[in-house]
Image (cartoon, helix red, strand yellow):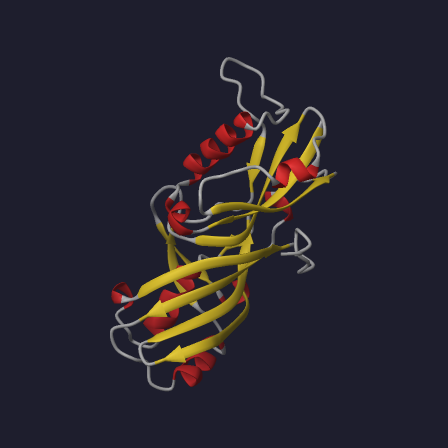
Length: 226
């Protein structure tokens, strides 16, 4: 058995696929292209596939990762020629040997976040610097029992910068915690900033695109060639 790691895009209408729908799509495409899939045992066998840190519905990605277990190697050229519906493209593929799961290796993700507001924020750069310089950045999140808990996002923000600003629109490029020890949703991050600026957060249009994922040493989990 071998482990095949794939870096892929999910854009356009495909960004509205839920995680289970995405898994089913990959399985159907792999079957159609006759991948030598390794199946689980039991009454309902399924291909052994893992997706790294599933995105929220509506989020696009230019570099997410997944792994699939094969019974034998197949040429990487054939893997990269696999045809998906428009919006999903396989960018890179390689065989890996890892004793840890794909999700366990992820520490952070880099995002582009575009925000459209109804009214502009005065001194946006200054407000953003003040927001990041706080001793703590508090937000609330529901746990699995449906109870609200308070979380300090300060340590979950690795990098954040405004790279575009015009009237009622701005774009952030940021690296946020993405692991089992903590996961800061990019939309939650933006809404915390809007609350700090006394902006009506629910009226903002927030578009998120993930660019890459990194390990605890801040190295990409897949060497970026495209």
